[in-house]
Figure: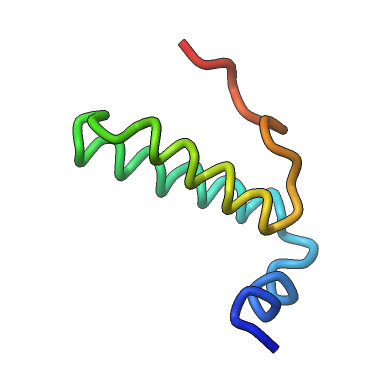
Amino acid sequence: MSVLDKLKQMLKGHEDQASQGIDKAGDFVDGKTQGKYSGQVDMAQEKLKEQLGEEPGHNQPPRQ
């Protein structure tokens, strides 16, 4: 069993909390890098959410 499979199993039923954690981590990185890598951070957030089974763009506030 891969690490990703183990994470999915542990997070089952807590997808909303995992999604919020991914968003917070991305915001933290954006803050530390002053938004310099925001495109890459957003892409990484989307990929992580896809891996956890969430639809891309689901439950995200509109971009400004």
